[in-house]
Length: 87
Image (cartoon, rainbow, N blue to C red; front, top):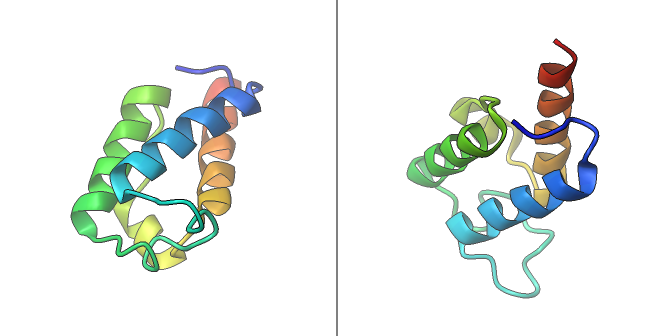
């Protein structure tokens, strides 16, 4: 599990997960999950990879309900990692 205070590292890893799974191309960095044609399998892959990388679980339903941008998703993961580190 990553240190909850290492935001640059969290940002780098989450960005890689997001861009790999959603095949983000230049110019789409601010697009939401659904604008990037995100579907349930992509949300599942993202949640699984976040769990593998950080040891925190993101609900697929949360991705669908929130329709996050990459920045929103980084904030969510960072918050969960910080909470898990504090526990």
